Every structure is written in C-alpha cells, then in structure tokens.
Image (tube, rainbow, N blue to C red):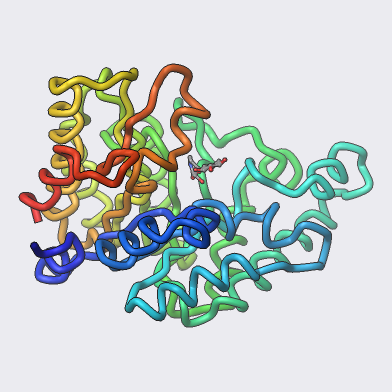
Length: 319
Ligand code: XIL
C-alpha cells in the first residue's frame, strides 16, 4: 500500500512528524515508520534553546544534527522548531534575567547571538523555521514573557530580521496553539503579520499547531482562517497535529478523532499556500499528551504497537 508520503507527494504537500530522537536511536520500528511514512521531520525537542545552548555560548547541535542526517538519508525536509519561546529555556538564561545579572541590553544581544548561531548552523537545511512560538495570549495581547518584559514588543521583528539574515532562503514562521479558528488570538497574529509585512519585516508563514481534543469539537472555520493568511501572501502549515481524548478509547472516540484529523488535513489541502501538514508524533507509544493532560492520551494516528488507527486511514483517504 502507498505510504502517506507517497500520497502527499502527488498533492504537492509535505507530510511531517515530530521526531523523538531518543526513540529514533533506540526503536527500529519507530525509525522505519518515520522513514516510510513522512516527507518532513520536526525535532520534538532537540532544536530548542535548553538543548542547543546548555551554557552561554556553548552550543550542542549533536542530537539535532543526527536528525538532519536521518532526514537527508531518507529524502526528507526539516522544519526548524523553535528559535524563541518562553518554555524550555536554559537555566543560565532564566536565572540570569531573574537575578538581574542579565539586563535588557545583554538579553537582546543573547537573543541575537542565539538566533544567528542556530540558523547559521542549519543554513540551507531547514525549509521552515518557527521563529517565534506562542507569543500571544488567548485574548490577543502579547504574552507576558521575559522577552516582552525586557525587550518590549519589537523583539518579534528583531527575531525575524536576525533569522532572515542568517538564512535568507528559509521560510520564517510564527506558530501557536488555539489559533485554528478565527478568534482573538489568531486575529492578533493576522494583524501582526500585516503590520510586519508593511514594514518589510521578513515574516513568511503562519503555523497552526492543532493540538485538538475530541471533547471540544472541530474548529470548522480553520479553512477560512488559513485563507486569510493566504491572502496576505503568507504560507501556512499545520505544525503539531494531535487529537487527544480521555482514555481508554472506544470506537466512537476513535471515529471522532479520525474525523478531526481528516478535517485538519482537508483544510490544509484546500489552502493554496499550505505547504506542510505535520503530526506531533505518530504513535501512542511516544507522546507528550499523557504527561501533560491528566487522564488523556491516545492522540496519535498509530497505536502503541504501531497499528493503524482509524485516523491513519482517514489521512490516507483524504490525501
Ligand atoms: C512539547 C514536547 O512534545 C515535549 O516532549 C516537551 O516536554 C514539551 O514540549 N507546543 C510546542 C511544542 O510548540 O514544542 C511542545 O512540545 C508542545 C506544545
């Protein structure tokens, strides 16, 4: 049977997965499925700041380099995730800001050096970078992070300019959750993109994470939301799709989940500039969901034994 990536190739869309690099190293079934089913990979964790710069100025790209090598060997593209976030920052950075040993001027320099070093390291090997991740609150105000507190709102334009300088060919994205539909948060991104582009800031894509939960119902205005970014001239992407449920599953829940996955993919396929559709892991064997959402799980398209769930069949049918 044709794999997801075979089918996606014909639709000229990339089908991606987040990769747990520990599982990739240790689990041959995981490795084989990653290679067979996907045309794009995202590092689930190993391109994040706490991993790549564990001490100030000392970079460790070894785990990420392994993934890039794997991708290359299997003809896969790599999504870069992520350059600026409020989570998974190294302790030296958060503690330095908290105790005042890193002031605003210094923090701006640290951010510039980090973005420049990381984007330069992977130059030419990343097709989309999540430059800023989760910078808005649900009400559309900017998130109250160390970045906003210390640097003010201009840190966002700076981050895009620095990333673009280091790799002019990579498509530079904003990325967030709860921005599937048209709402205050997604509208804040839309307005920000419009403003930045008018100012000539190189922002080129909107990433919709799509961490869904079957109990909340499908965001039926997803395609309309993607379309407005499309009209602005931005690429779009589904970047972290998973659909969780309270466990254990049953056939009705799995059918709901399959329908949600199908809806996410259909909205991407209906959008001209939707370049990639990425799931946040593909097997229930390795998923961030049970550790994050109490009582929930089984959010992926394959079960813990790599058997196809209805969601896998739904994606194949939709492609
Ligand atoms: C998650 C990873 O899946 C976990 O392994 C890690 O412990 C925490 O981060 N939004 C994002 C991702 O942008 O980086 C997050 O990934 C999930 C939510």
